[in-house]
Image 1 (cartoon, rainbow, N blue to C red):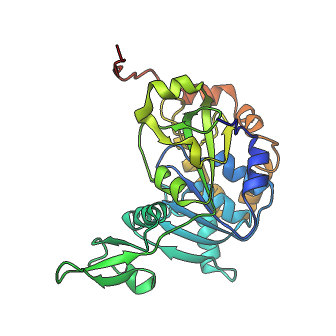
Image 2 (cartoon, rainbow, N blue to C red; image 1 turned 90 degrees about the horizontal axis):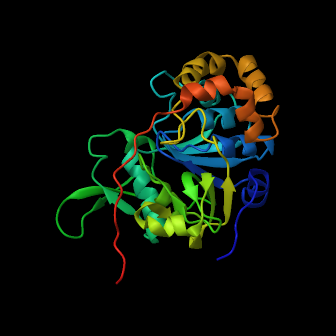
Length: 303
């Protein structure tokens, strides 16, 4: 199988293009801040950003002028408050184009895109105000009875960026811990960048196949980027930096502070390695989790 390894710089330069639709997925953990920062550094423009629960990374990308639109379900700084850069754009004279869905509505859109379906049906918009403000959420009659459900259209990102714990050089990628809709987003996308904490041999992947969420066949580039999720976390590698999420509230409220932060922590570093070194060994020590191994599984072998 071909070796698909690339630097983050080269993967973003080659596969993320102005005016396209980009999905950076990962639910609470495995959010590729490293990829978002590289997109900012390369000054990509006019992107439509898709994601369940847009959080700090999309606030940073919107503040940097990357995005013209958001396709999302719920947005905010989890447990803290608003995403103030996004809020300023929505309330100001340079608004974002937005499409809002429920979490399941976004999962349904990715699932329809991955499966080649014309729409995805779901019940969860009964009693919701979202269909009134999003014309793409359409009531339909069930072909098997009198029930009315809602349909959402397929979502086909031009690029899906998925952070994983480990991958081999050809792009077989494994995740454990909380799963979001990384698999669905990857299969729905035209191009896929896998970002991994760790590069492993193909034999490691083959020895534990049930953890393989994304197969090499749909992957265009593999980027090995340790600590690429901070301030999000990577289960088993480092914890969520809750202090950062609290600090972001004040930073994002003040456009000058936010610009200064981008200048220091995104434009002011050439790579994720520099970012991690700048954060410092003491902070990383605080975020290092203790061991919590799972019981091994014996898949058995042919006699």
